[in-house]
Image (cartoon, rainbow, N blue to C red):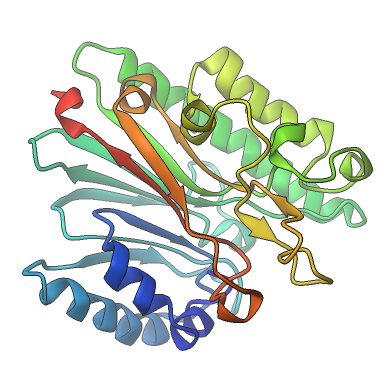
Length: 277
C-alpha cells in the first residue's frame, strides 16, 4: 500500500468497488489500529452494498510507521496466526499474517499475507534481518507444502510483497541490479529453493509463461513508471493443487503516474475452487 492512509486518500476505494476481491491481502499499511479501523469501515460499506459482511484481520508493526499487514474477506475466517514462528523482534512484526478461510465450496484454505524486509546492501544489519526472515519463511513454506501433500491436505496461498525479483524476466534492467538488494543472487536463491526443491508454485509465472515481467512495482524516482522500468516484487506462491486451480491473473497498473495510489500495482488471481474438493 505504501501507507494505507495515503492509498485511501488517493482513491484505492475505487479499485475496491470495481474488483471486490473475495480475499484481499494488504502489505505496508504503516498505520496504527485507530487509523486502520475507520478506513476498513469505509471498505466494508462497499461490500455491504453487495450484501456482504467484510471481515478484517491485521497486524500493526510495533515500530511506528513501519510495515503492517492486513487481510480482508467476506468469507468465514476459521483461525488467525500472527508472526513467523521464532521471530519476536519488533522489526519482524507487521510482516506475516495467516488466516484459515472457509471457501464457498466448503474447503479450508490457508492464506498468508507477507511483507518481506526490503533489505539494504549498504546496511549489513538490514540484510541480516532480511535473511533471518527468509530463513524462517522457508521453514514455514516447507511445512505448508508437507501439509498440503497429505491426503485431503489443506492448500495454501502465500501472497504479498517479497521484495525480491526472482529471475531476469522479473526486472527490467537485470545486469546492473545484480549487486543491489532485491536482486542479489543470495536472495534469489531462496526462491529457487521454494520452487525447485520444496515444490511450491509461482502461480503468476505459470499463468503468464516465459515473458518479460509482468511487473508490479515501479520506483518513484525518474520516469520508471512511464517507461515501464519495473520489478516483479509481488507474488502469489501456492501449493501445487491450489496453483492448478488458478485460471487467470490481472495486474492493475494505473493509467498514469498521477493516478497511482501506491508504487505497487495490485495483483489479482482468479481460481476455480471447485478443484479443491
